[in-house]
Length: 111
Image (cartoon, rainbow, N blue to C red):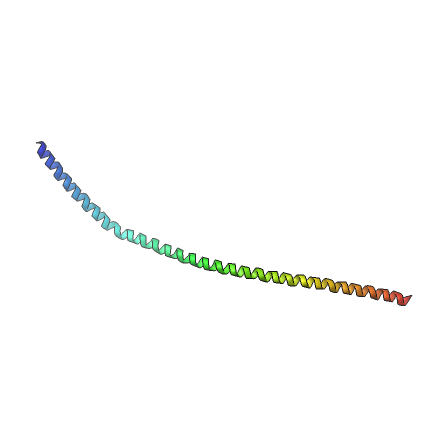
């Protein structure tokens, strides 16, 4: 009797194991297309992110280059402005000096 119960148990167990294996394969077959689609979508998004990263890096390098050029030009303009300002001060001093001399000469001529 015990042997009969064990045989039935083993047969039932083998049958359940086969059913489990079939179900696992079936689930695997059903999940494979979905998994491929998900991976394809992720890979496409990653490719887009990578392209965007490359574009951003390229534009950042260009922006840094242009910023350096702008800074250099700004310094040159500042130097020109300072030179012009000094020259105008000198011209103002000369005009002031000339007016002082002219006023003094007029005073001498009048006296």
